[in-house]
Amino acid sequence: MLITPLASGSAGNALLVEASGTRLLIDAGLPLDELERRLEAVDVRPGSVDAIFVTHRHADHVRGVTRFAERHRCKIRTTRRTARSIGTEVHRRLVRVEFGQSFEVGGLRLRAFPLPHDAPDTAGVLVESGGVRYGHATDLGGFSQPVVDALAGCRGLFLEFNHDIDMLLGGEDPPHLKRRIAGPHGHLSNADAARLLGSVAHPDLELVWLGHLSRRNNRPELAEEAARGALGASAQTRILTAIQDEPLSTACLRPIPGALEHSRP
Ligand SMILES: [Zn+2]
Ligand SMILES: [Zn+2]
Image (tube, rainbow, N blue to C red; front, top):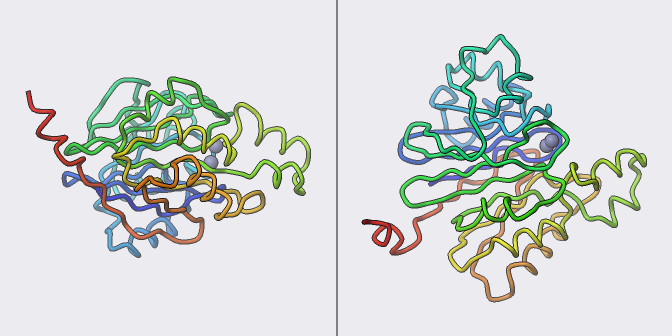
């Protein structure tokens, strides 16, 4: 399974998942031409994208969805209340999904799970193919056991490391914004994200992407230090930090050695 973060942060989010001959975008929060430019920069023809999974309705996740889906004739998969906010002009391209119910997009198997965030029905998503599971969770103000359970056993994880709490509280943001970001339906701090990572890490976790970093209230080295601390010094897990302004290079998640054999009846 190939994973390419195309953009991550409050100015726009998009990530490409490729496996079993299927191409899926998770979010399309860049303007259409910028999203196309970034796909072409990683040698992917925009017209070859099969579907977009939309996590929630905030502009940094949906900005390019409607126009991309129309121009490139791909389906949009999302929860009912997010679908309602995307609008009627792409009605025929929308396919609603239910939390907890698996569904297929080409050769990929997906399942959405709820995240606490200040947009209705905000979703995290799991993508599985060929014995590889990828878990994606950004835009969450906190987490409880169901989120930990949903993200268990992933080969790769993309997790929000939004802010350093001291930088946020000591920074220039107005008080109401600080309350929103740090609140239970805002964004995950480095410390909380590290706790989540520590709860779902396992020896076969190959790669963790740190995402949705705040430009004002975080620094990559702080997020990476928190993540490394959660994984423990001996862990083999690679850490990559997704950025706002350009795609990261594509990374490959391989099946856990022996996992496919063991899963045969
Ligand atoms: Zn966001
Ligand atoms: Zn959001």
